[in-house]
Length: 388
Image (cartoon, rainbow, N blue to C red):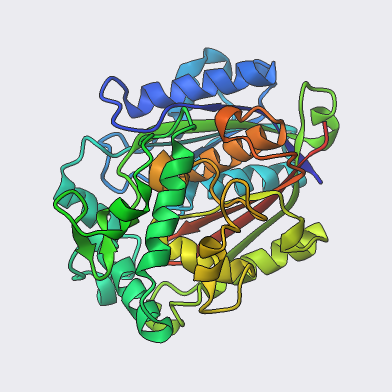
């Protein structure tokens, strides 16, 4: 345990017309420092997670954090990016800096503003997270990539439309009680399961309710070395971190197995010295419901091909044996790409400090996080434990 979360901030996710990338960054940077009880002069380094890829005309954004205070001037600041896992890439980069003893306190910010971009352009931007020589012409853009994955999974393991609808309904039900969630509406299983004008097929067997939302938003963390953290108001330690990067072309992998995800989970659980059953909850990357289904299998909750059992038996409900996405996940909370991984860590820290309000799980001890970039290409797992 070399690093701990000692403060956080989180905007609501959604269509935030009154905000800009700069205003979102400044807001959460300031609020996270206040929450940690420190000032910018106490920060040794800044890491910004911002995917962009064409969503914002303002690129080269690391120094926008300095707009929160002139006291940041001349501190190291770097923007990192790893597709939809950009937020966790930023978090893990901060931890590496602390482990290397190049910093004691690091401010991590994740941000994205997507809703100002026209729909067809959004699809083209997101498709850049795939291997363009093979997938660049996929109908439906990035949703089409996961539609293809869902179709292959169905061919191998049978029609899982009921399970996908149960995952969507679960996450929307959880999102109702999350004040940061973009969609706070319990849609119910029947709506999610049934094709309709409001819930059409988008790609392959995936309907609109199987797809995460286009979102604006930001989140921030203050991460400190353990010695520093134990002198502060709260300390949520990183019991383990793991990053497993896989091949970009899906043709080089068994794409319905998410092997990079499984490897990241194996490494993290081994490092933490625990089993999956020791976790109190998991925040996982449900960019599409088929992703959450396959992730049940990759994390070891069920054998391959049996992920549906976990949701049908209620294991992953908020009151189940392993609550998955008590926040509502990307499905209900939203998915502003650069902010997503930071949000997952912030909400997990809230859970462990029992400050999660309506989405609080019972008596949490250990929290697991899985954040994914591309189609199981960039795979990041964190295991968190409150130590103060």
